[in-house]
Amino acid sequence: MVTISDEVKTLLKDNGFQESDVLEIVNAAEASGDKLKAADGSVCIAKNVTDNLTSYAVYNDKEVVNCYAHQMKAGEPAGGWDAEQETPLESKYICNKCGETAMNMNVSMSFMGMSRVGPAIVCQKCKDVYVEPEMVKTLAVAESILGEKRA
Ligand SMILES: [Zn+2]
Image (cartoon, rainbow, N blue to C red):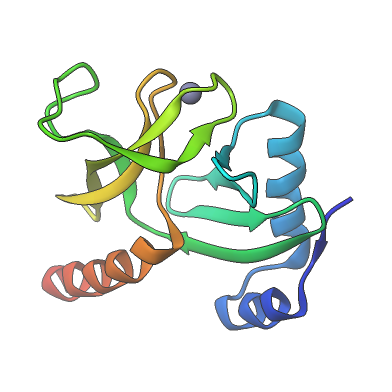
């Protein structure tokens, strides 16, 4: 049973997340096997997608070590799922569902009817897209800029 680290508890308060939401993401991923696994085995990344928010939990076999969310909806890779990518780079993650190495790719990110391209981790086989914690800050900035433009 995974618990939530003190550091993440503080994060949760700041982000308005509930501890139960985060544990639910982890439990659902453990039940379905639908998650990314770091190639070195250190952590897993699980996510939950709703209409207006994608939430993530990063966890090891003991505790949740990070959580984050973005409002932008991650879509398909630039050029489509089957397009040859010019420079697909292997990410440090493996798709747990199919065992393929996930790739660093640019995907379409849509928000409030607008869309742009942003970096993500993609399993081309499962057509699944994840955003790394390092990338979320960039998305948050884009969300606020697009939100202002719209307003
Ligand atoms: Zn996969």
